[in-house]
Length: 119
Image (tube, rainbow, N blue to C red):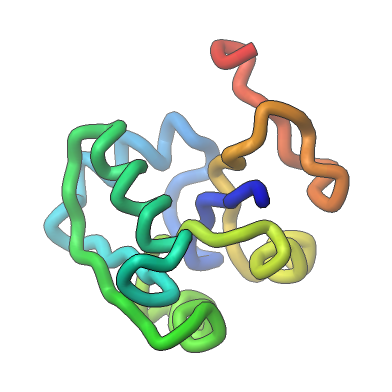
């Protein structure tokens, strides 16, 4: 199942390049929500932090629902979760999306494009 890297709707970055720069510059101020320790969303966040060699505060929840509620409410900044859990919020414009963990286009997310540098 593809995962999507999303942020609260008023996150200041408009694209992945801005997102990455903002995350690295503000790592001590950012919080990353996940559905609980060991959940796919937790592992996705750990992998992302490892890939960009930057750590930020991880906030484990008891499931995707509570994590998403706090992301929508602005209590946390970033989340990575399955497209089945994030598509409605993305299409509704309630969160910003910065990436998808899929080699191909995700049909439910027609506006998500692969970076030209990634093929």
